[in-house]
Image (tube, rainbow, N blue to C red):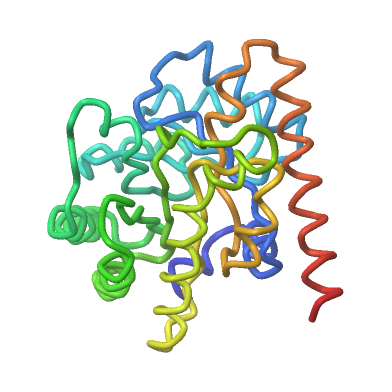
Length: 259
């Protein structure tokens, strides 16, 4: 049995149906109250997976509140074991968005090194790795191939959360999603051509308007964070997760009709 196949049957089904919704609280978000609100919203809104900072206490809190599988994110592989002991289902290197405002850039070699180090530390847990959006698309595609060879079970894309759309409304939401959508397509195409049946999660800059585009671009699921986390009202957060969940269901119907 592969590491990926060790995920719960419910999660595996979501990946296979290309309908997984992951709610991201933030790699550097150690605010327990914030994680609590996000976890509640994820459960009540119908999310499938929660991504929290790599901290055992946050893992326990989120798991208790949501009852959902937990993914922990970090750029320090040495932190993964304690989070796994606390109940994390899978681990992830990245997402790197929170580092960019600080001028901290992760290049291909560093991400690859983090992957190799992670696999030496944890060998039996599914590992997701984010491909930095700062790389040209052809380099993102090549890095994805290298990461799979190094032990990544899932590849995640990203796009600049600081992208400022020139238009408002629906057009603006589409503009914001372009970097992620382009990366999703390029990476998925590269993996398939190389013969790798590896799930790709599309994340960063997505909204209810663009989730279907991410799935159509090849994603097996999507990761959403700021569109939920920026809301202060818990009811609004729940409503947003529910809206995103319904958007993914609609995307499946659209793809089924087209095919």
